[in-house]
Image 1: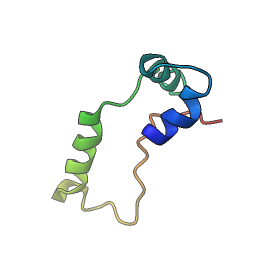
Image 2: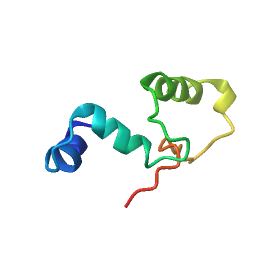
Image 3: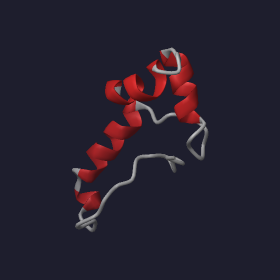
Image 4: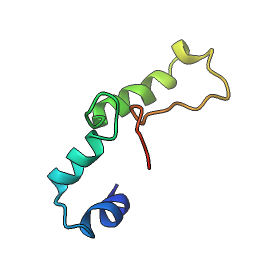
Length: 67
């Protein structure tokens, strides 16, 4: 995340809070995914409940509207 922050935020002079707001505005639910949500998905993928998912990519971008 630091690399993205350095490229997209530092140059135009954004602080960390402003950068988080920028990221949130690029997603459909208008918020940034929490670390706990990423961990929950990883934990789910490691269980038998995800055994039917083979060769899958899990998209954790919250529908990000990347430029």
